[in-house]
Amino acid sequence: MRMTVPLRPLLAASFAAALALPAFAQDAKALHLRALAATCANCHGTQGRAVDAASVPGLAGMPASYIVDQMKAFKAGTRPATVMHQLAKGYSDAQIEAIAGYFAAQKK
Image (cartoon, rainbow, N blue to C red):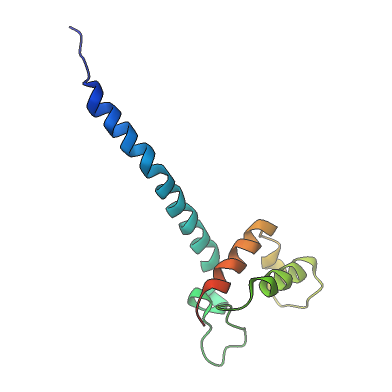
C-alpha cells in the first residue's frame, strides 16, 4: 500500500517555515545579546542601570566607543581593576562591541 502526501499543503508549510526563519534568527540573535549583557547586571545593574550610590558605574547610555575602549584596556591589563581585567578576557572583541552597542542603546 502506497501512501501519498498532498503536495500543496506540504509546499505551503515549507514556504511558511522559510519565511519565519529570518524572524527566528533575529530573535535568537537578540536573545543572545541580552544574555551577554545580563552577565554585567550583578555589578552594573539590570540593563546597565546601577543602583544609586553604587561603587561601579551604570553602563546604560554610555557611548559604545567608550565602553569598547575601557573593556579593551581591562582585557590588556592597562586599566587597573579588581575583577574587570579577568572578566574582560572572557569576551571576544566582537562580543565586547555587541555588548557596548547594547548598553549604548539603553536609556539611563
